[in-house]
Amino acid sequence: MIASSHQADSRPIAASRPWRTIASVAVLVGLCVGWAALPLSGGGAGTRFFLVVAIGCGILSVAQLLVGPGQPTEAALGSLVKRTTDYLLTIVRGLPWAEAMAVSVLLLEVLHRSRPWHTGLLGVWLLGYLLAVHLVEIRAGAGILRAQLPLIASGIGLSALAVVVAELPALPGGVLSPVIRVIAAAALIVAGGLTIPWWLRRSR
Image 1 (cartoon, one colour):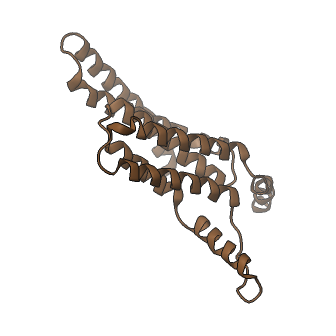
Image 2 (tube, helix red, strand yellow; image 1 turned 135 degrees about the horizontal axis):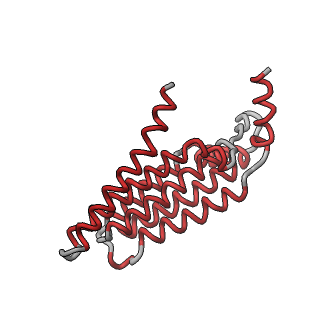
C-alpha cells in the first residue's frame, strides 16, 4: 500500500520535464566555463583546447538533459537517416558529459594563476551545476535535497575555510591575521556541528 502510494506520488515528477532546472544548468555551464577561462590570455599552454572541450561538454550535457532517455530504432526497420540520428543520440545520452565538463573546467582553472577565493567560488558553482543535473535526471524538485542541506552547507563551509587558510600567507601580518584564524576555527566548528548530527541520524 505504501509502495503503490509512493509510485503514484512520483508519477507527476517523472512525467514532467523540469525546464527551469535545465535552464539553470545552461546558465551554470556558461558561468563556470567563463569564470574558469577568464582572462583567456592569462592561461598556460592548452587553455584554448580545454576551453573548447569545456564548452563542448557543457553544451552536450544540456543536450543530454533535453533529449532524455529513449529507445533506438531497430536496424532492420529504421531508415539510414533514422539510424544515424539514433546513433548520435546514443552518444549524447550515453557519455558522462556533466562529469567531463566539470573536469575540463577544473583543468581550465588550473591553467590560470587564480587566487584561492576565485577557485573556491568556482567549486560552489560546479557543485550547484552537478546537483541541478542530478535533479533533472531523476525528475525531481529542489525540495528533495532538503535532507542533505546540512551536509551541503558544511561542505561549502569547509570550502570557505580552505580558501581562508590558503589566503593567509598573502595577507599582511598584525591584528588581521589572528582574527581570520579565529573565524576559520569557528567555521570549522560550525561545519562539524552540522555534519556530525546528520551522519548520526543516517546510521540509525
